[in-house]
Length: 236
Image 1 (spheres, rainbow, N blue to C red):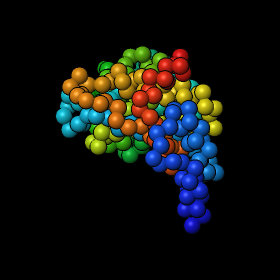
Image 2: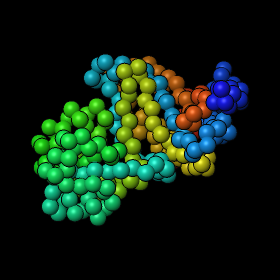
Image 3: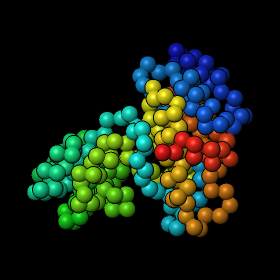
Image 4: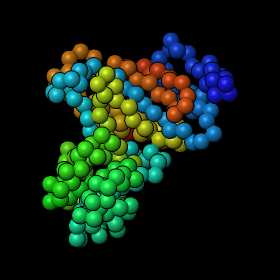
């Protein structure tokens, strides 16, 4: 009951019929957050694509300039010198046959995975375990690479991956509610720029059809999609 009252009080601050500017939406999302923990500001972007068609799939990765505020645990499948490089760069776990065997035994206590190309044949056998959890290394997303040190540092610093869901919506974290407005807006600017660059050539009509911001527990705040261009002021 206490949660319902807090949510209703928060929702009362938001005009459901209004489309806010990004600045207003960020400020309102922060004001409407009520949880005792440091909530995450989430963005949901509804796209004019049909993900059932392979040529309209939208996915990619972006380094948020101000990070996510989350602690990211990274596992690296590599051997020899590359294993040492990964650990020196801050990887939480690194190894080859030993780490693969550990994952086969059910270990998935990490948020992101990287693999060097020479070991992907063995890592591929973990598809049924890593795939459903979104942990499978992917060359297109920069997580199958010999440059493991840079990949680890990027993931730790706030590099996120995004992929459109079957209903045409992309969800992503934009940072903690405790971040100041300019940092959150800077992250949103970088994310929306990546979304626009990922537009499929086969997408017709309006590409960005709706944008909503919300804290983890708070109400959604709708944004005027025509104002995406104004985010350039926050781009680094």
